[in-house]
Image (tube, rainbow, N blue to C red; front, side):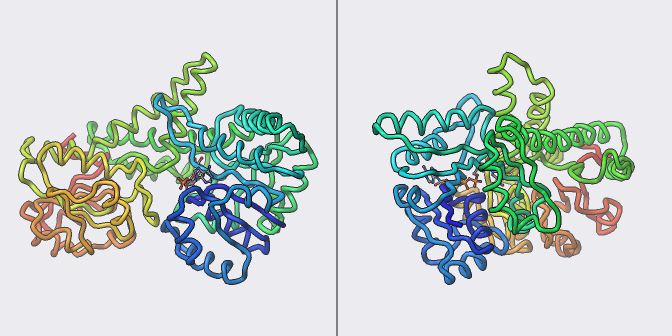
Length: 444
Ligand SMILES: NC(=O)c1ccc[n+]([C@@H]2O[C@H](COP(=O)([O-])OP(=O)(O)OC[C@H]3O[C@@H](n4cnc5c(N)ncnc54)[C@H](O)[C@@H]3O)[C@@H](O)[C@H]2O)c1
């Protein structure tokens, strides 16, 4: 089948590469010329495991191509996927300007039947706005063509995006037209062969499903972070509590890890956007507001511990930072807890020596060169000349470090662990002080 995908970011590129891998003919459209040029050379502008290989293979096979030309995009595909960003507006609601710009392009260039598929995470009612925008553009052109607007939210996780797309738990399709439901079913069939994983519903329920999923996951995390703060103050160990509750199948082990707060391009903005949508419907989403509030507070916790340890005197100190990305296996720095930590440290006059296996480039792009910031090439190098170590991303390579080397490199033998990677008793055996999240320490 012929597909056009607007937006070559984390979602659009993975979607395009995976559909091409299944044998479809995919054209990716992006407004960012630099990205499109890189992609034409077979280079991925983002880090996502397996993506470069998949792109190269399908470019060579002629199944995926890239352009900045929206007209070419609208002409190419029966399916017109919208996978552009929906960043937060000033008040936290989802900004639909990119989605509606694509709708306008489709209205401007359409000249035969098209299925417009919204893959971006968008508030309930957006499909109606997309349809209205295309209708208005057609009216201005004085022409009329048939088209359908379908909601098909994406549930992939950065870092495991290709596997998630290739073997989805479910494919949610929101449509009011059974014919487009069938077309989408044929398109997704190669990915759902072992059993039917497509859940077809009305458009509004589909749009809400995506927010509901992210809000539920964010709620689990904030709940555990709140409990971690309680555990600290009550002399309990949240990791024991986690095991104790996770073993209940009604609760489960997923997403109950306490930490330095959730980040990334989805949870923070989606929880916020859902809460703002609720307000537009004259409803105060108290739980969602609390989830957001707890997360904001949690992102400060590691800094507060560091500050207390140094009696508020951080000026001139150097903190080694392991991890920058909002989670392992991605270079995505959007809303990353590391950003809050670094910014607080800088405000307090401290320096940061950071290491991340893949997010160095993106972090440097955000912060540029500054005298109180060094990004180095390895975890041991980050320790050189540092007073203390803080860990903020749970990369695999940080899980079994050389504690002797950490102790001898730091001027103060102390680790602040925002991801609870180690057994506190084990670390203390090396003569290191160890402060983690919710493990009954004295710095809360
Ligand atoms: N990143 C994730 O893990 C994830 C997962 C599920 C859903 N989503 C949702 O998918 C959407 C896209 O997210 P992302 O992380 O891929 O965003 P992204 O910022 O990585 O990519 C968006 C791309 O769209 C391009 N773009 C903007 N306007 C355009 C236009 N008019 N025509 C063509 N391209 C245009 C941008 O240049 C950019 O390359 C968002 O709504 C997000 O909430 C993201």
